Length: 143
Image (cartoon, rainbow, N blue to C red):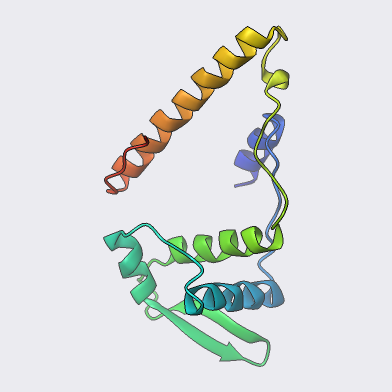
């Protein structure tokens, strides 16, 4: 994980660590619960995600709520990732993390070349996203 974070940082992407401390996980679990309860979150319908969610249990402790799995053999990583990303979205409301300045990846600052490079980059991203979703069994096509 650290190697991937270092590569993304070197590429100029904003990376922020998510410490998995009890208070942080409890806050994230409560946030996800609130989003679901208030119907403020929309998820892509996917059988694998639905299965992972069905295998989660909420456990209350003196430190608050936490999400864990019913059986050790169950995989709920996708739910934990959802919980962490939902927390980051709520915490970062009003902030933009979208890259709008592509100049660090383009040697020539000619606007025509920048627009072409950005279009190629966007097309590459859409292609990779389609391949990722297809690989995990989600029928998805970027429009």
